Length: 234
Ligand SMILES: C[S@@+](CC[C@H](N)C(=O)[O-])C[C@H]1O[C@@H](n2cnc3c(N)ncnc32)[C@H](O)[C@@H]1O
Image (cartoon, rainbow, N blue to C red; front, side):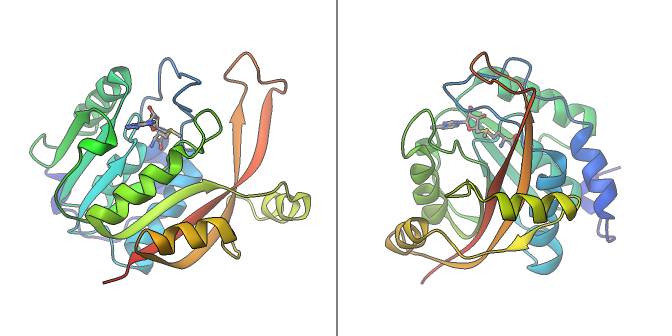
């Protein structure tokens, strides 16, 4: 079956299970901040984009820093018609290719590029991205926002919440995979406006990552991420 012909409403749980079934990054590199997007966060992002804002189904979708393809293949699962993912890491791209084949998506509709995001040109309806937060390379996420707004009118972008907020963490822990609408960080608001975008919503979610790198002291780490919904200003 051509999965792109799929138009029926997909349950969020099925989307989450699909994303969870994809092979993760086999050898994550700290320098590239290769944290895999948890399936609940990927599903929240894609569900909002698809069913609240109509930015996925029958649309062209670009995934900047696609890793193993969780966001892009999730978009394909919901019915995006043209999907492009780009990542610097050849192993991530190889894994994304294997995930595409396993999921049964046609190579015509899903394309992978091994390279820097600066190589991307052209127009897309929507960008979905979980860029490096800029912890290893300061400002790494800013280049992703600039590129996204250069090539698309709608951008769904994940960023680290600007401060540690124990109260927000408590609320998110009790909301079991949900999200809470919050104010944008003044810095990102200014930066996005300067880059030609306007923020239409910011949603906080709890991200939990297992111990992945030597310098991680705890077995798991909870922190808050913010999903920014951005529209290009004409
Ligand atoms: C936080 S990970 C997210 C991976 C994936 N999107 C996911 O949702 O699981 C960020 C990704 O961006 C990639 N990356 C970092 N800098 C890049 C650049 N300048 N150009 C392309 N990819 C880059 C990394 O290799 C990594 O796979």
